[in-house]
Structures are given as structure tokens and as C-alpha cells.
Image 1 (cartoon, helix red, strand yellow):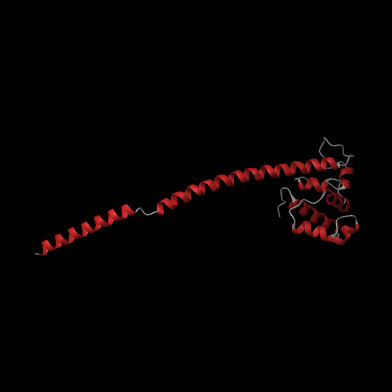
Image 2: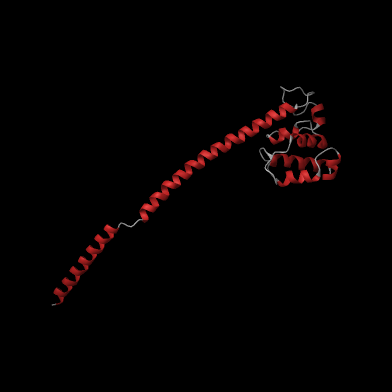
Length: 177
């Protein structure tokens, strides 16, 4: 299975993998300070389009043994880091101090960036949809124009057809006699 690039699906992927790795039940996750099983089920089922709260993300970090801020970073396309990995200096970008946890403000800033990126993406889609709708309207107009019957043209055709038919009958009568 491929790992989703970002968003709730990515978080769920890593949460499920960590729960399996630690051989925990949902109830054990809650006992360790994590979200209750209902909250986990809502996140998993995506019954709401809301991003989990910072509190819920931090509770996931705590209960799964991740460095604080890992769940939020995972939502944004990063990877969660276990507390032991941080202690060993593994996986942390060089510009960050391995001893300093990710602050709440940094988490909020990263989430705000993620939301802004989603807004920009949807605005592009919205503009594209507007262009497609306009092209379909034009096509619809051309289609209706093709279906419209010109009464004068039909009358002219019928008159020409009658004249042609009459001429052919007259020519046959003359040829027969």
C-alpha cells in the first residue's frame, strides 16, 4: 500500500502502523493518554472534514511514543518520530535542535500553511471548473443552434423537392408516350 502524500489519510496510515507496531488496542491507546476509541473511529472514518484538534494530535503523539508535533507534521506530509529516535538524533532536520520539541506555535503555523496550500489548490480547481463550465455553455449554444430548424429553409427545400418531383413525373410521362 502506498503512503498518502498528506492529510488525514497519511496520519491514519502512520497511526495504524504504530498501533500495530506497539501491539496496542484502541482502549490501550486511550489509557496511555491518547484519544478515546470514539475519537479514533471518527478520525479513521473521516465522518467530519475537520482536521483533528491540536490537543488530539498531541495526545496521539504522547500515547504512541512520538515526539510532540509528530502527528501534525505527518498531516503535512512529514514522518512521525519516536521519542527514542529523537534521543538518538535520527530523522530530525539539521536546522532543528534535537533536544527541543516542536512548539505549539510551530504546529499551528505548519497547519496554517497546510490550510493555505489547500485553499490555493481549491482556488485553482475553482478557476478551472469555471473555464470548463464556460466552454460547455458555448458548446451547448452551438449544439442548440444546430438543432434549431429554419422554417424558411425547410419551406424552400419542400418547394424545390415538389418541383423536382413534378418535373421527374412529367419527364416519365413524356418518355412513356
